Length: 413
Length: 108
Image (spheres, rainbow over the protein chains, first blue to last red):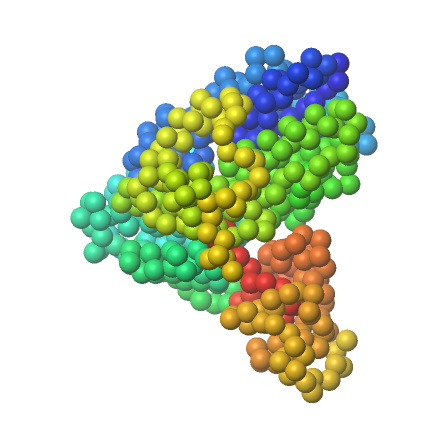
């Protein structure tokens, strides 16, 4: 038996495990999945939980339940990968040999990297919705908030689901309007990027949404430190932004085991081939999901399309055929804009988000890059699909590569 | 590299810029172009500036994206505070512009 080892049982690792065991070639392979923690979180739920859309128990399930019955699952911390010896060393001393290794160790937040963020006001006046505990604490803080200045700050790119902070400010506008408090709440979005919308078509189509919703954007704000007592953010160029309630999107980094293995960049993301997903400099290690350094979104849809292309290439790999450049950076995201509406965007490495309809050209039912109630229902339906279709490795009728059919390419010119 | 004469203007060099002043095609970049854009930004390029610019261009060749500030500080070895002194008010954007790369962008 040949051995395939997956590091990480998150969205990418779990989907991949379920897809692999369905392959006709799989008889000759043994699957080991290694992860340090036992809970699988529905991460898109972290955005909606603070606003009371989900209860905490709706977005967490046991990881083991979603992994194939035949897989060997080790709940253990990885010490380091030894590509020279083709094995993985665990912190408890065990060694797990592999013929093919999949790194799907994800990205995690590091609030401790920003001075002042994780001090005595953490989970009091300073919050995040980028982990489960943070989202639960923020739900309470929002319910208790009676008015003042709400600041959402992205510390640094890249982050998971790059539209989520923007969605958060839209949802906050809706939430406080519903509670009759909107006139007493000032909403500020401070981002290191040159603006809230940086892609030309998205800026053109959606740029006025922020003004309509009375959301103030502070662009090019690179936070240096937080003063939790004076309740202000200070940037490297000495700008200050005051807050009453701070929602931070902290620095993201890849797994520490990647750093211990000396396989990562300055943020522990693994240099990865853009199209084959091979770890650069290796011919038996692939990287999927948020663990890569690829210039596409760190998002579940991207992981899904990566898994699709990887499975096709894996079948070529075991037959000794050359890998095809199948992955095109495809991402497909719902953007919640509040008031029961959402915007759907579809893009890849080379194609901007464009207006049009999705998935069927001219029919939809979902319009692209335009606010619509249909997209919001699509997102809620997605919660069910995530647990019952996607993680289980059932295929979706959406091609892995981006299709220009149904997109208004004239607009792009 | 610092002693490039800047007699010509950007339009005389036939370099295409987008509405925000970023190079449309990074392949049209030359050190002379960098000098001219820097002049527009009110920055006189020193050896230290060039270290950053060369790092940023090399990073772009490898990754297909301009580096984040952290990548410049950690891998390029220039502290964040110094980057703000070299390229005041938005170093990520200014470096990208002078190095002939597109504006740093998010997903939408």
